[in-house]
Amino acid sequence: MPADKRQVKGVFAKAVGSFVPKLAAKAFEKYGFHSAEIMTAWPRVAGAEIAAFTAPERIKWPRGSGEPDGTGASGGATLVLRVEPARALDVEYRSAEIIDRINRYFGYRAVATLKLVQAPLLQPAAATAPHMLGDREAIAAAEPAPVTAQLDPSLRTALEQLWSSIKLDRNSR
Image 1 (cartoon, rainbow, N blue to C red):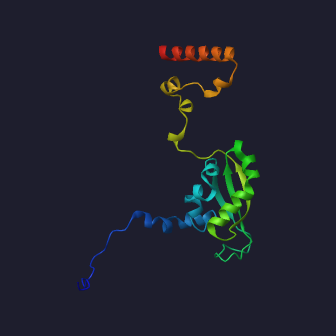
Image 2 (cartoon, rainbow, N blue to C red):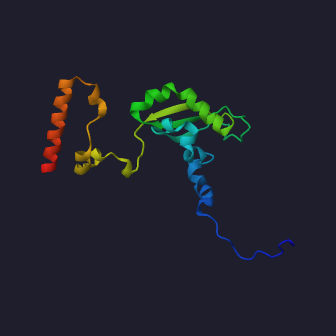
Image 3 (cartoon, rainbow, N blue to C red):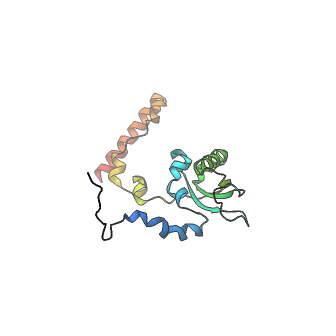
């Protein structure tokens, strides 16, 4: 077959997502991120377990070094990491592992230290537990924790009776 010699005329549609990096660049630069990649790929960078209770807030680069160009010439930045208060000590113990994962992901020494900020993560409203929302139906439908299997039989019986009376009381309302 002969080569296609048709000329392309007109403008083709582009995916909206292709415009996001350029539009969001200024906002990310304000917080020290030279790209949005660490924010968008945080579960891949840190691992799903660590990402469940942490989130990167900003990157502080050493004075005079600017942002690295990928050559590894800079001494590495300080990543400010928001951590659930209950897990802060765990993250502190695993900080060397987290830094290593970040640097392996980027392929150069991007981060040298972590600074932890203990604050609750910003979660969407749909992820909130039903008991926090005051949803009576969800609470009534909930079952007691499986921890009762490890208890003394008399204590387990008493707890099961208490739970059944709570469910009956809530259903009668």
